[in-house]
Image (cartoon, rainbow over all chains, first blue to last red; front, side, top):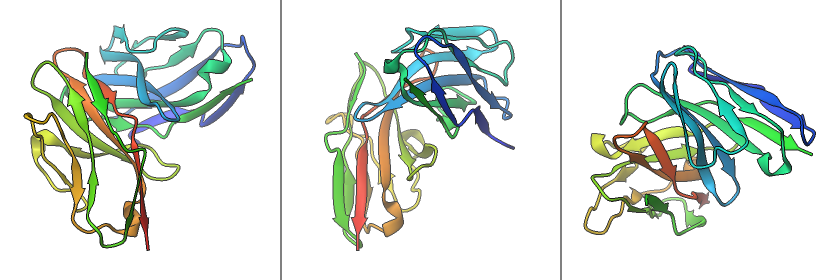
Length: 112
Length: 110
């Protein structure tokens, strides 16, 4: 098992550009989430999904879109990048509601 | 509102000394709590789940509902324990959403 795979690992964007952060898991987990990690703020939930076709907003959803067309994939789209979106982004998946998450290795995004 | 508080940004201990990383939570219900660890430049890893009452790498954590705490403890710190530790609260009944604390950087000195 590869676990949770995120691509790319690093990305630099110009303000206003759009891009998609990819996340894939091969563990057949129903639950998937996107978090951003910022210094002194811990991890904050952006969007989450409880299964294919079902997504919902987390704590900081503005400026981001998600979709979940398959169980395996949960891409995160930045619509128009802003410097405030400079962060490390983590994707995570979980098989059940109380099992705990498996995290990907993260994408370090810089918006200039 | 759900909240997780980790009061210490940095905790520095000597090798062999006991470790206690503090976590307090605010939640109107029966909580599900976790500890995650992030070693330098690595992904977050699940360390403990309160429901399993396990000991991983010598760490334990007990849920104290009266004090609304879930402190992480280890009797004898090792150099390899140096990492960032996050306490997290699961929102029951709604999407398996985790609320994280701001983390505590544990530094074990020789």
